[in-house]
Length: 395
Image 1 (spheres, rainbow, N blue to C red):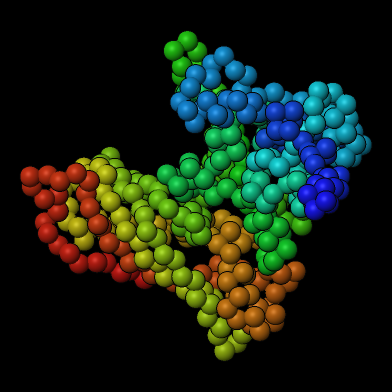
Image 2 (cartoon, rainbow, N blue to C red):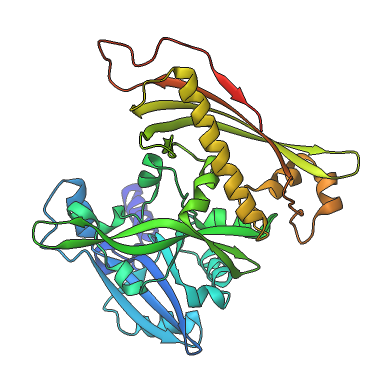
């Protein structure tokens, strides 16, 4: 009798189990990896990149991906983004899963009509998307940029668009920006955000033909949800020394001579100090410590001369960048944010729409401490004369 009661109780428990009737099996889904946003003739144009997850598995196992389609790109239009996406749903075979969305590319037209903030809000609200979504702008056709495959048949999940961190850590020139960072920079002073701009080039060549690849050397400055300006490479040279996540990058010294020398800068630490003067004027002192490695040496000079030239070259780049951006009311060095966080009372007195006025002499001094750590592989004779002194130079 006791066994029958236990059996009956067990059967009753089984009837209330929920099971997996509403689950979505991974192999029955298609995975969105990239989103392109364009605008033309009053219509929103959506491009959606779907990647082959089998290719991701083979890439990690070092398999051959040549027989697999790396990615497919769908296109749909609508009066709004939502309408365009649902029009795209009508053409798909399976449910689209957005949890692995990695990047969003905007056309210049979409940026000009204020699409950035709208898309950021849309992705922030949707339950499947995450904050590790990178943002770019492209002047070239979006579909062409989204169909470019990485070199060596690497999976699209490891492309420059989907995973830009690896490339940035090797050369920290223009930092990628994700959804979380984008929301912060749009909401906090100085309400300006730098979006990397893509350009399609053909700098790589395969055995049979040239390969298209993506180049990032310019950034679009977005303010008040519109394009304020696009900064060229020569301006970004000085801005890189203020990148928060700077890892390493190269620097050419002695450019005025035919004997160029190249150094790699790393282990950089930058400190911006606001100085409030008696009349209420705010200026800034920049203190920077960094290490360098000499990769190519043409001129036979001392360590101290090398360190002095590194300081001079970096200061020249910073001043050139500041003067160019200051005239265009762009706070690329994030001086407004520095004052906002370190002296909020002084910031409140002079800020206008979250930004402080920048004059030609607002950047008061630049102090750089350079230490050359090594000169590459060991040699039988020292590359320098043994001097250990460091150089500090003030503007």
